[in-house]
Length: 321
Image 1: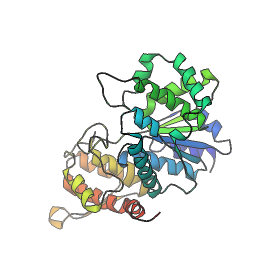
Image 2 (image 1 turned 60 degrees about the horizontal axis):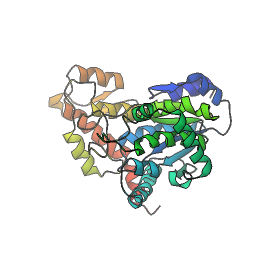
Image 3 (image 1 turned 45 degrees about the vertical axis):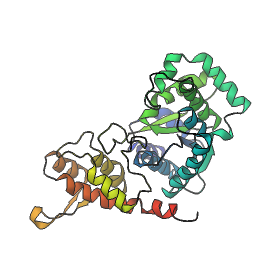
Image 4 (image 1 turned 45 degrees about the horizontal axis):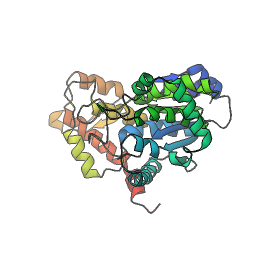
């Protein structure tokens, strides 16, 4: 596969790559490293799985994958005690393994390197270069809303910036909520003599309640290790207005998961309601947008797909590995 073909593949399912020319240059290198950081703060859900699917793709293209289990970040963001976060990190790692990342994926606890003298020195340098306003703004979509924010909320983006340098990453992958921090990193890392990574941003999935973001703290998610009964119940209750294409979490699941794995989705219906349909992505959006497909028929098809798609995760979580 040549570089142009790799670029085209990497662009699939992403909202932006900053920037393409830099990525082309990096693809000429050997031993490329891509990373994503996750706060160990709750259930791993389909929102996380969007980035994991992209990491798997990069892995198949020859990238070494590093996953930062950002325990100190979770602590700074008020996600629990150090002990609670440590247990959640173990659970998170097992979920990522169950989603099919290769065995040579490197899982790194933030606390394993974030107290070193070089790391701390870089954070201090960034602190002298970053305005309070810019640091706070970069956290808008990452931290919980707080009318009386703590100092931790502005230390967080400085640490995340240094993480990218400390882990020697070529590509930093994240959802769009990470964009402001990643742009801060691209701007300021060169100012302290460090190389900035290419940044790839994937879309956010709406919550099952129609909220703009699927989140474990809001309870509006499908966890990757949910059992079959739970998946059925959550999808049954989910927001999926007939004829609505924008902000529809069920259609987004079809987009980001079904049609990245297969070309068509089978909608099973009794003959009296029109019989079965086998639809491509474009056909699904057309027929649903016209109001000619009942939301429950779509939900049933998505439920069936997710139960099978997430089965390897459930099996892995129940194993002794």
